[in-house]
Length: 115
Image 1 (cartoon, rainbow, N blue to C red):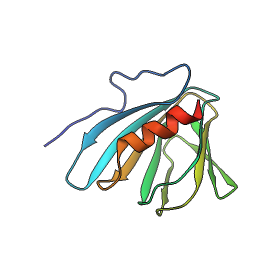
Image 2: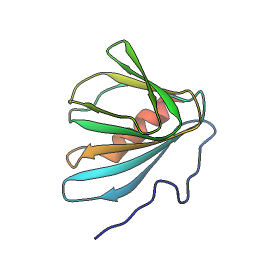
Image 3: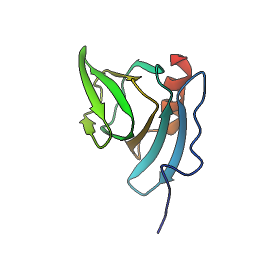
Image 4: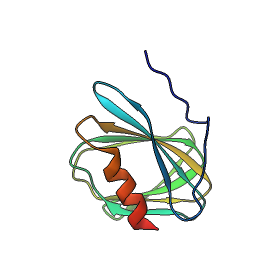
């Protein structure tokens, strides 16, 4: 058994989204992304499917140029190789589920390159 918390030790980075691995399982990686209002993650894609959950806040989630307003409780799933971007419309906590084949370092690189 493993446990983690989306709210404990939550810290925002003033200059870029804060990305932290919450849990590594046999089949997935659970990532927390904390974004201050106005922060963005520029367009990027992953070779593997993902699931994004808005735990707190509100984001604009762009998929191939179409904008989706996501709020607390919303989930979105994307197949691999789909270009997408995020913009925080409010301070937001996002749970990202990655395939075990994907890496948290890739997500951190996207956050770094977006600042």
